[in-house]
Amino acid sequence: GAVVSQHPSRVICKSGTSVKIECRSLDFQATTMFWYRQFPKQSLMLMATSNEGSKATYEQGVEKDKFLINHASLTLSTLTVTSAHPEDSSFYICSAPPGGRDTQYFGPGTRLTVL
Amino acid sequence: QKEVEQDPGPLSVPEGAIVSLNCTYSNSAFQYFMWYRQYSRKGPELLMYTYSSGNKEDGRFTAQVDKSSKYISLFIRDSQPSDSATYLCAMRVGGNQFYFGTGTSLTVIP
Image (tube, rainbow over all chains, first blue to last red; front, side, top):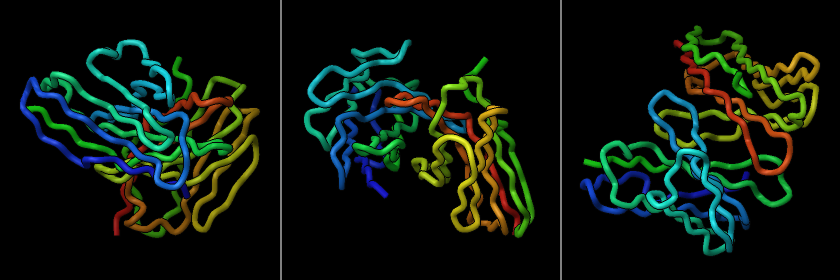
């Protein structure tokens, strides 16, 4: 199956700092990638759709100025959590649908802890 | 009403049991159906993918789609402790919008 990687796998930061999370499609090109957030024992919450070469599409209630998304190439999307606060602590997961396929593959996730 | 409903469990079964996981949905336009397995602190892993109605088998796993009842199932035969995870159903009409269930937590007891 297609492989999606994320980096870092976990990060701990102080309140007020910014954190960048990378999502890469390793063996396919992805014009679209998705960013999800997951709280413990809860399902995936779609935050935004990242489109290569254009602006991301954010879901209702997600602050686009706080969660900056950049999809600069066909294999890389980044999510930057700006001025992170403890309530931003969560598990962030990206996914991508390989071209011509009807499903999507997930990265391993990034656990963010904001102190 | 949610687009996709899934019983969160938790579900606990003895090793070797047959497990049945289910999702119901409201949008009759859904065409693509998926099951993902998610281990604790990991990203979801695609387990089964089905287009339209019917059955699909892969080893100990069988996915069923009944579009007339808007109901999908995942069966796990001869369940193993390594099957202990959260199972998410997902579906889509077309394009890139996916709808996920809340996930069912499964524990297989040795």
